[in-house]
Length: 436
Image 1 (cartoon, rainbow, N blue to C red):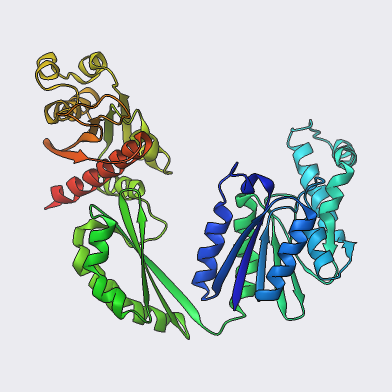
Image 2 (cartoon, rainbow, N blue to C red; image 1 turned 45 degrees about the vertical axis):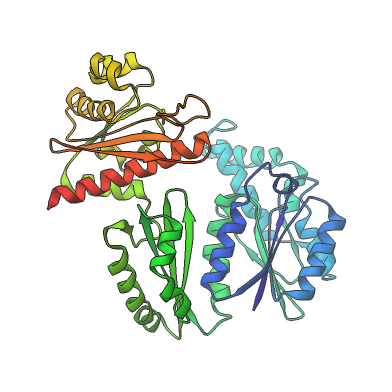
């Protein structure tokens, strides 16, 4: 079956927001074994949207539209879809009731005031109804003959419409509404349309570049059939997705295992996880927690980016102690105890300085593990001896300090991001090495 994605919204078309919905839905459709041939972005223009829907219906079996289901005048996806297939709109009483409940909950929660007695609650319902502007009821209108999908995270329902052998799916634009709705309602519906089961595993690698990683598995890629192997380049990482199709999950897993074993053998400890949902920082946190260790970090050129990545993970408070941003030499001396002699002789960007930063972070906080970064992120500040992209990273575990010198390329932001990734990977490797 051929799937087409239509992302509706002038803000997407103009690049004001990133189209993460298309990325998510593309992967979901691939996992279902469906052929995604077209992705289209169209602005909030009824004429162009109508043409886009008609074109999609002429060449694709399943059309998934995201966005344009809200209450405002430029939210026209539902109306235009109905026009494209010659259907009328009618009021869906369930959706109307859910919208009322949504506003009533907001009112009682205190957004518009609250009441704590029975009469007050009745008044709150009346008040909530009164506060709903007429354009909100637009969201309760449904395409004739469609299946309405409840939205548990907002007010705009979604819809599944069948027309002349085609399946049209309408989903709200906000990702925090679209994804739960897709997983709860659309995914089970689409799974019924195929007799195949698709199982996928992700091998996440750090410390090896994309070209080298591909070379290491080129024979597997050239021989691939089922499972398929697809490498993806990420900043500082390479992800390899293996996907097998079979009549059931057990058979698909059986097909996956030999390929997974070969990748594990070839990449060894460069693999940091086989869990698609895990990130490098979440793996580091898990390693620290399992060993009962805590971490402090000292950053110069990354300016807190490493600490930010770590604390973005739930549960980081169990292992994260302190983060230092020591951008100036004075801060390195004052907060981390970096020797003035070291800075004078070797400079702030040196293996000697980063070593003392890591050691000073442990000493200042009592942490069992520390990491440090110093470098030249650019675009200026580089010299012939110390060019832009020269970065030193260090990790100290159980009294042993490991230092690495990096030569990175790219923009200032990319160099900073790569520095953080390589430092997280260094922490991971040092923790694993400390077990041996």
